[in-house]
Amino acid sequence: MAALVNRRTVISGFILLALVFPFLTKNSYVLHILTLAFIWMIAVYGLNLLAGYTGYLSLAHAGFFAIGAYSLGILTVKVGMNYWLAFLSSLIITCILGLLIGLIALRTKEHFFAIYTLCVGYIIYLVIDKWDGLTGGVRGLIGIPVPAGVGPLSFEEPQSQYYLILFFLLLTVLMVYRIVHSLSGRTFIAIRNSEELAKTLGIATMKNKLMVFVLSTLFAGLAGVLYASFIRFIGPDIGYITITFDLLMYLLVGGIGTLAGPIVGTILIVWVSQSLQFLQDFRMLIFGPLLTLLIIFYPRGIIGAFYEWKIKRQEKKRMRALIKKHKDAEFSDANSVPDKKVKEG
Amino acid sequence: MDILSQQLFNGLTIGSVYSLVALGLTLVYGILHIPNFAHGAMYMLGAYVTLTMMLLWGIHYWLAMAVSVLVVGLLSVLMERLVFHPLRNAPPIHDKIAAIGILLFLEALAQLIWGADYRSMGTPYGEVINLFGLTVTMQRVLINVGAVVVMLLLYLFLKKTMVGSTIIAMAQNREGAHLVGINTNKVAMLTFLISGGLAAIAASLAAPINLVFPGMGHLVILKAFVIIILGGMGSIPGAILGGYILGFSESLGATYLSNDYKDIIAFLLLVIILSFRPKGLFAREGF
Image (cartoon, rainbow over all chains, first blue to last red; front, side, top):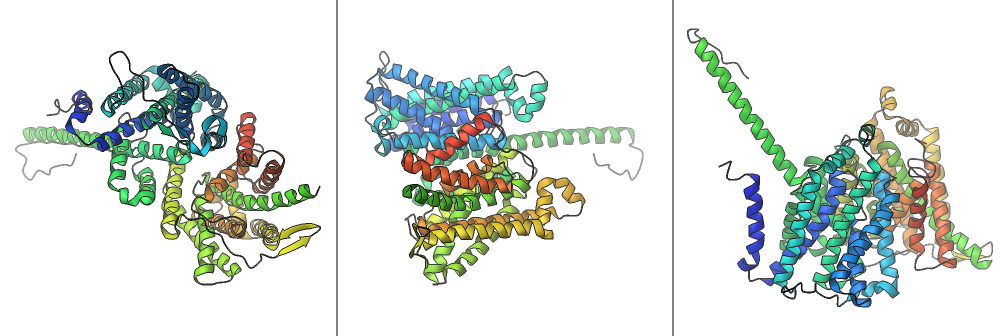
């Protein structure tokens, strides 16, 4: 049983399920919501790398998401650039802006970093909202093209867009997996646990922090680009602070600093939001306290709680085995002694 | 010249409100080292409670404000007990996220109770008066005077009373305060009470010249953060000074630069300051 449900089979099972999902449902609405959830997941992975693994809570994440989305929108609609060229350029633009902002933002620490990025996020939102000539202001950008076809593949249909975005999600997960399990990943965790100590050990903290910051903006930008060509309309709201809070909630519910957390959290919250649609603007009445309670009682989310439970169970099992062995040994060499008391382990 | 002095008076008025909000924030930061993102929600609730008291029960403005101070202050204490106290030993990222959770909840709650509409608050002090050649409403004068009175009272409380000194002691050194027999739990609760009360006063004073709506705390709290970074986190004179600096630069910026981008001034100011001084302009411990 244990061999059957090991990590590899579970992961392949989920990938298979994601692959056949469009054949299982004829409901295009469900497919739409799921595709959107995939886009959010990509952004949440970016946030996870920075906040979860490196310990820097960036509240400008929605800003970078919006930069990616608006870059694509402006390059395709206003400049009329080839789609995939615009796609690549948008990612590069996001990364360059991320690098510049990161260079300054990462000089600050902890609370200052959170407040600094909060303000940066607000500036990005305000610029998008007020710069009518470039971004269309409050009216937003309309008519962003769907991804252009590659060879025999075209992305006009919702199903094919689903697969395209799934592809990018899997790519993201793979990249994050490789990063986290590499020396760089260990370095990030070392910085999270104690930056002073990491520095003492000879880790170039600034270089590593900058790397992870740019990577995180890359994923935010990628999600933004995919969002723009999936929804095909963007307004300044996508850069507002509430989107950052949404992403943060997905991450926390799933498990901050875990690999599966972003997927679990996003799916769960998106699904619950859909079934609580009658609440609409009041969904925060439930999610707000949930966020707070979670951080008090389960700071590492569902996945973290699951791992904790698993470790505890294993520990219990081992203890039981130990006690049993102990008892057996006592019984065998002290069989003749009457009224023997059983000692606790 | 006339526009300039008018704008300076405006800056003084906005600055007074900012200073009051920033004072509450800086007090809490000084004691517990928490950037209380939920403070903006307290500001918003303060305005709503005053508004409700005036409309529903027809209480006088000042009395409504007193009720609001009490309600929001107690709510703040409740928040400290239920959320920040259990998290006192957690990594700093947890406090921030918990505070964001409270903020989201309170905003949704306000929207549920009072609706999402923009509402205006009446004031018994709407008459226009002439003050040294400036034409201003009584309410604006009141904001300035009220803020100064509150700041003075707070100063006297902190410096001249025993209870106030315990707050300063704890801000200076938590362990030390504990050692000399100060009940740190009580002081933390008291600080939250004062902080909530200050937010309620600021909101009730400012609401008649602005509008009341669930998201009204967003910009104010962001700017209050800018102010306390400007003035040094945890510093009381810094918060007051920073509030007025921001108020003046905004009102002047709106007149002479661009009204569209006036909200950006605060954030640009912060970005520039933190670029050169990552720990704030007047970074120092305690008061």
